[in-house]
Image: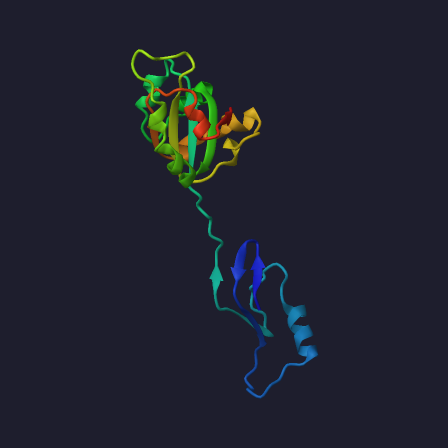
Length: 190
């Protein structure tokens, strides 16, 4: 018999009456006694009339789903701070990241790898800078956080940024790019 209880899977449970006589066969009355004698406060407690054997118990495993978070920021005074970021991030840095972010997107790593080789086409040459140029900050997360998804309220979004230190594996900052580079990644407004 297979039973799942509070997220724990119990592969098999055998409930047999105790008896010294090997030819003993249980009856409905015996089964009723077993259930009456079992204490309800402890599911796996042995009673006088029954023996419970657990052959295997496995805990549910958390599925790790690494993601990449792309942030688009305009070049400003915080850029030097972001270019020198190291893991783990300080909470104050995460709040500045939130304030500087104009557009973002979270998705699986393969989505960004397939598009990142085209990013060099949007690199801004010295002397050709515009006010709407951007830098992309690529943050490798060790797990998904749905608060970075599109259409999330701003309170949840700022909380997600504050908890970034617990999720970040690595950070990379792009060179200065034309704003059209954001279209490669289908970024959405913060």
